[in-house]
Image (tube, rainbow, N blue to C red; front, side, top):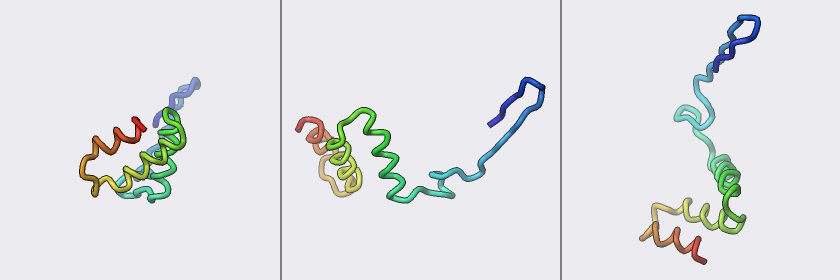
Length: 74
């Protein structure tokens, strides 16, 4: 980030390895909390939890589209 002040000075800051980067990955709990925070802006709590459960087992789903559709059509 760079900020230019009215007195002419420039302040700079750089985060080398931000939280969530490959060097500092988020924990599952942190990912779940972030997902809940973002998804709850557009979905009711029950749908957020259903969708989160689906996301956590996406590799084992036979038909991802069908499973996700079932969350929104229920």
